[in-house]
Image 1 (cartoon, rainbow, N blue to C red):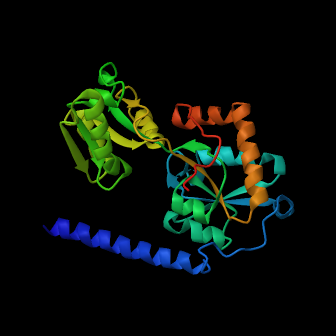
Image 2 (cartoon, helix red, strand yellow):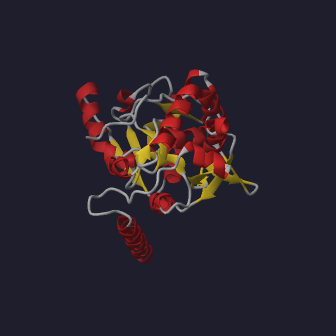
Length: 291
C-alpha cells in the first residue's frame, strides 16, 4: 500500500510540475494563442553567427544520447548533414524535454530535434519541417512467433502487453475491435505494466505474446537482444516526427524541408536509419493535417 501511495504521490508531483511548465509556456503566448513573434531567423544570420543551435534531450536512444560524455545519435549525424551546406558548426543543447518548446521561443536554441512528434497542439505552436523519422506504434513479438504472428490478426486469442498510460494503452480497445472484426476473436487478455522493460521481460518469459511501443524504441530492443525478438509493422496509424522551429522562421523551415528531400533522394537519410535503427522508415512527404 505504501508503495502504491508513493507512486500516486510521484504522479501528482509530475502533474504539478507539468502544470507549472504549461503555465510558463502559456506566458509566452499572446491572447491569440500564437507564440510571441520575434524577428525571423534567416539563413544569412545563421551563417554570420557561424553556428546553429539544436535543442535535444540527450537521453533518448538512438536519437540523441551521451556516449563517453559526447552527445551522439541519429539526430546528431543527420543534423550535421542537414546544415552542411551552410558551413556552420552544429551545437547540441541538452534540454529538459518538458520545457523544450518554451526554451525554443526563449531563444536557447534555433531548432528542436530528438523525435519531436506531430500533434494538433504542437503544430499550432511550432513551425515544423516535413518528417525525418517515423514514430508509429508497432508490436514486438518473440522471434519464434514470426511465422504465426505476421500482422495484428495473428494476435487473435493471444495476450497483448502495454505500458500503463502509453500510446499502446490508448490503442488497445481499437485494436481489440479490429481483431474481432477481422479474425472473429479479440485478445484473450491485455496486460498493463508500469514500464516497457517489464513488458519485454513478460514477453521473453512467455506470459504475453506481443508488446506495443514506438518503432524507434523497439529497434533498440532488437539491437540489445539479437535474435530474441522481431517487430510486426502496420499495427497503429502512421505518425512521424519533424524538426521544430519558431513559427516565424519560415526560411529556416523551408531550408530544412529542401535538405530532408535531398537526403531522401540521394539515400543518405536511409543509410543513417540503417545505422541507428537497423531498418529504413517510411517518411511522409508533408506535415500531417490536424484541421
